[in-house]
Structure formats: structure tokens, C-alpha cells
Length: 171
Image 1 (tube, helix red, strand yellow):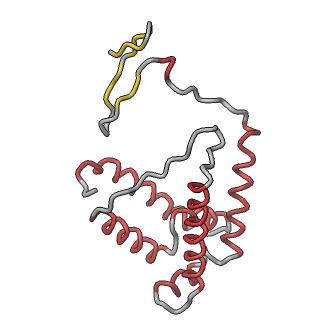
Image 2 (image 1 turned 135 degrees about the vertical axis):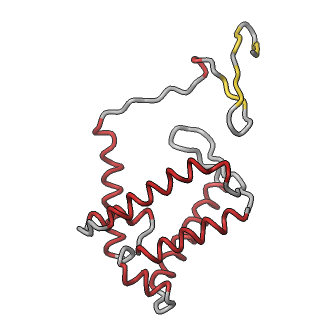
Image 3 (image 1 turned 135 degrees about the horizontal axis):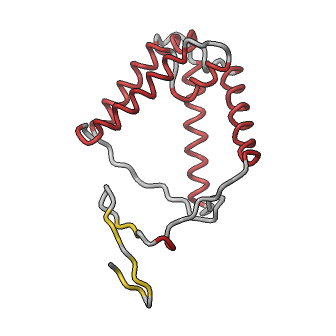
């Protein structure tokens, strides 16, 4: 229990050691939006999917060329995405841009661990074998490659297994 002024708040310790208030008044309220509110996100996803298809980023053959070092195409796409992301984050930090809800954006520094290597290798092997990474899966399914549904289900199953084993894995 913690008392601030006239108000007493119950506190609990979260999984990662942070202290959270259990007081109902201090909890953020979730806005309930109408389905029309989400149309802009659906349209943005469709636009992104079209870009992936037109850029041949979802092409199994382009992905195989990348893993065999036969073409620069995918390296150019990935490199330009990394460069765009890095410049965007640099500008967001420099100009102290706030999120749409008015809160300050926080970019935590992440520590490197050997789990990054294992996870990266597992991700890369899966990408090389299936020709799909999580983002383009939906675009591939949208183009009619319904066999990719098995890849999507495998990705969901892998995420579920990771959730079960997370505390036993190196981080």
C-alpha cells in the first residue's frame, strides 16, 4: 500500500520487477472504437501488401537468390528499410516527437545476448526454407499462395512454444 495525499493505492510487483498500481482510477482506460475507425489500418496494410508484391519481396525465387548470393535485390530492399528506419528514429529523437496520444516516445537500449544469435539463426533457417518471413506471409496468402497458411500456422505455433519455454531460454 502506498499513500499519496488522501489517496491510498495498492501496488503489485510485475514479472520484470516493476511496480504497478492496482488502483482502478490510475489504470489507463481503453478507448472502444467503432469498426470504421480501423479502416485506415486495413487500408495501410493493403497498401503495404501491394508494395511487397510489386517489389517482388514476397517472391520465393527472389528470397532464394538472396540466400544463394545471386542477386542484390533483397539486400537493397532490406538495406533501404534499415536506413529509412534508422533515419526516422534519429529524427524522432532529435525533434522530441510525441506519439499520437501525446506521450513521449521511449527508445530503450537493448542488451545483446546469445539468445539473439540463436533466434536469428532459427529465423533465418525458417525464412530460407519457407521463403517467407512474418510480414509478407499475409501478402503471400493474399496473392493466392494458400500453402503459406501452413507457414503462418507454424509461425503461430512457434510463438506459442516460445511463450511456454521463454523462462528456460537464454536471453
